[in-house]
Image (cartoon, rainbow, N blue to C red; front, side, top):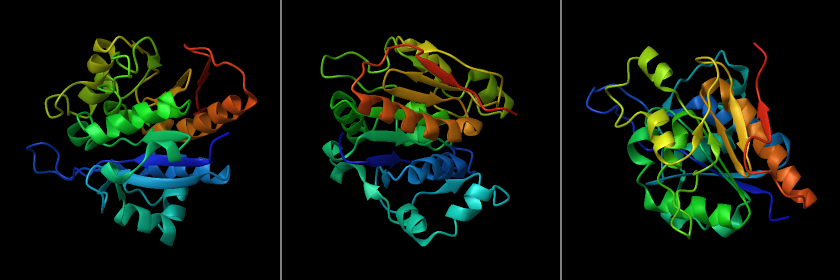
Length: 244
């Protein structure tokens, strides 16, 4: 088993298109997986395209997990001084996780350093994971054979229906559900804003913020499965749904 070290990736985008509204990484999409992986004794680094401060959205302090980590000095240091993706080396990590928030739609899809790291970690038998709009960071990743990495995998992310419900369908640069399907992946979804997590081989994705904890748990489960030395099925070997 490789070093128990996981790379979290988040956006540097703090303006929502041309609207003038603030955006960023959705806080629970960082803290909930962080909680799960920390509890399983994984070391976590946080990186972003430009490094430095990661803007935050969805800062709900009535969420007890948010409250814990927003009062943790080490976590705050990682958010305020994130690593620059260009300076990160994939061989150090057993998994990469891309957090969402609408900001992820603007700077992550075409980031060549993110694509390099995703492919390097995946082709080194690591786990690739994302939640909500973070899946936008996976849609342009191509394997060393030139195929889209998510092709033929079951994949989820923020749905068209959810985007329309929050009134952002004309603000985001593309609809994530459509883009996932255009890459040859099998898009799956649950009810709007309900937890829906899919494990497809070593690709783990969650549909929306409610899926964040399940994504963290699923990353741990897949890594533990890999450690057994057994082969992972490619498609839909397990789904995780939270109870209301």
